[in-house]
Length: 281
Image (tube, rainbow, N blue to C red; front, side, top):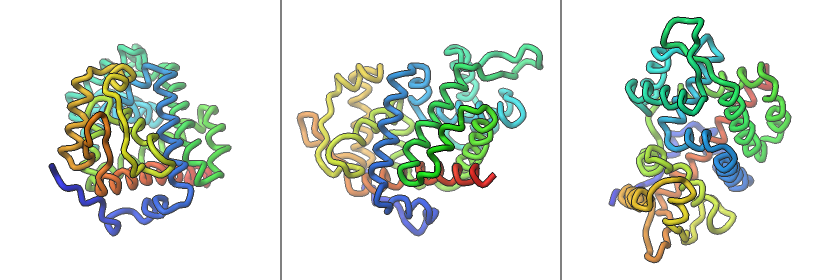
């Protein structure tokens, strides 16, 4: 098992550490996890996008490119490969997947290799951003009205451009959460299983209590095999994120807790800073 020592505070942007210390941080982070799970239950196509970090980054980049000049396969390959979350080849495969679930359609009036997001995709992504801003508004109440205004197409695309540009810049930097990325963000359905774990136990974040998990329930809920869930949790143990206590009982290791706490602080901080930049306009 790898020993996870947690994050080095001096290496993080000060805003992330500030959010992690905020008195309402736990409430906001738990709401973020709960809102994402609700979206998964309401929209199976969006749930499929949330299955792993590569799919999420590709979908976000597709929406971003559409709003900033046009979506082409070559541009998507470039921007996705720069993030380090997926290869150009996988970006091509995800384009086919997005076409399959009717999130993209070919731009028939433009050269081959160009695509346009469907209304289904844009509506789902808008709901996703509104749900995320709803959680961030626990810490920064001024974001509440902004969430409502994302129903306006111009506001939605402007906010998406700000947020995506910020996130793409961050991906060029060193990964501050390597164990978490390998254990939960890359494996299929890992983020979704992590959201369930985030909402277990006491009203702290993350919980220091033992977490009881049913592999059968998780496999059924997220449409993966029982064996896949077992392997994912074993990977999290090997990465030093989790300890298994037997009979479906797990707990986060101290270093794993630290990575997880600051990962959610990063997400909330970026939503807040993107929202502030949007409001400043």
